[in-house]
Every structure is written in C-alpha cells, then in structure tokens.
Image (tube, rainbow, N blue to C red; front, top):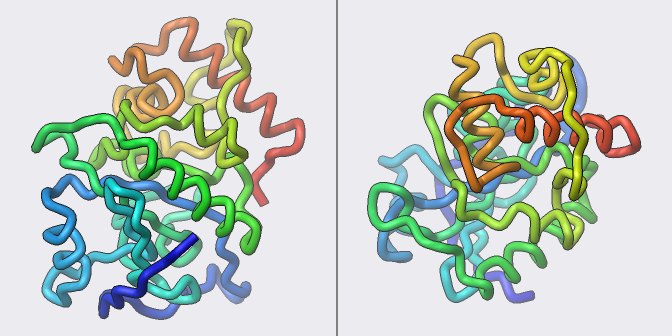
Length: 235
C-alpha cells in the first residue's frame, strides 16, 4: 500500500475526555461531495476552509495522507456517537472522492474500495476501534449529513473485517426502537427520530432509506445489537 503525503495545516491537538488519555476508537468514512479530485484536496489543504481529514482516497485508489494520525483532523463537525461529542478527538477520518448527491452521486469504484479496505485494516490493526465504531458521517450527524450514502458498500467492508453488518436473516423484534438506536450508538436525544432512522437505513438497509422503522429495519438493528453483545462491544 502506497501513501503519498499531502500535508494540510488544518489540525490540532487531540483533546482527552476528562482527565483520561486520548484513545482513538472510531473510524469515520466520508465522501467529498466535490469534483474533481484536485479541488477536494486543495480545499482540505486550504487554511481558509477549516476542514481536513487524515486520509483522502481518489477514485483511482491513490491514497493521500493529509494529517498525521496522532493529530486531531477537522472532519466530523458537530456530531455524536455512543454519548461522545468530540468525535474529532477520538477518530480517524477518511475522505473518499465522490461527487456526492448534489453533483452526480455514483457508485464507488472497486479500486477505490480496495484501497479503503487495505487502509482501514491497517488503521484497525494499530488502534482499538471496535467494529461498531466504523461509521459514516451520516451516522454521527444524521440531520446535517448523508455521506457516504446508500451507494457505499458497507456490507463488502464488513465481510473484509471492517465494521459490522446484520446477519442474513434477522428476526423481528418488539423492543423500543429509540432505545435500540441509542444502545447501538446513535444520538436520539438531540436528533429527530426520522433522521436517525434514515441514517441507520442508509448504512444498514440501503435498498430503502425512507425513515420508516419497518420490521426489517428493526430486525437488522436488533441483530446488530446481538452481534455487539457477542463480542463487538464498544470500548
């Protein structure tokens, strides 16, 4: 795996929670929502933008490192996961080149996904990131963001050992939806349930992401919680 350094000035110190040491325990996937690749890279390296990520992967699969992993890149914004709100301090962010929903959203090329899987597995080998904490920007900011979107191949990543995916035939459940979403990590206290359900569906049921908590949605969520309880729990 070849990584080219393209330093961005947009980073700072990772901030510990309370008096604890900083632990990197999240991996956040984004799309750029910009074309072409050079424009997105230039923007993340422009001090006027106040945005960055640790890594950028273009559609040909070339990987650029913008911010060292020990530094706090500015990619998550106002977001929350499992009760934590300073996601930038505890995460590594990866931006994938893709026009996004405003400029011709399209499938992610396989060479780009192959590069992402290789990079993600390398990151996971060096940091205590549980599978549940491999998330998209929309998972941690369901009102503001919809990336990387319904075309992103989360199931392929999970099969490769990056993240979680529900079992093939999950069983329906009568448990409380809000409670289950919160248990998995979503911020249901500060976001409308419709947006949270839509974000969950974009990640785990992309065939339909209408914000309606039907039996399949609830079943997949319940199954994921079972997988978490079976050994994929958050640290």
